[in-house]
Image 1 (cartoon, rainbow, N blue to C red):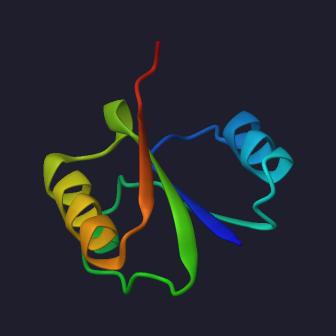
Image 2: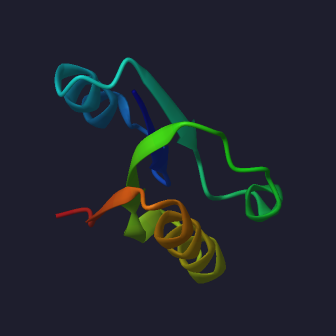
Image 3: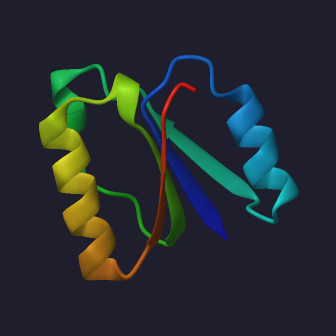
Length: 80
C-alpha cells in the first residue's frame, strides 16, 4: 500500500509511523512550491496525511477533492 504526506519539512517520524502501520511506500510533497498544485497525483495512494500548518489553502482543497473522488482516507494534522 502507498501513503502520501503533504506539507511539512521534517516528516521522518510521520513516515516511520506510516511504515509501521503497513504502508510500504510513503511519498512526500512539501506543499511549499507553487508547482505542487499542478503536479499529477500518483496512483495507488490508499491514505493521505495533510499537515495543515505547512500547506496553502488551494493545495489542501485540491487534495481533499482528489481524496473524495478516489475514496482515499485522509488524516489532517496540526503542529500541536
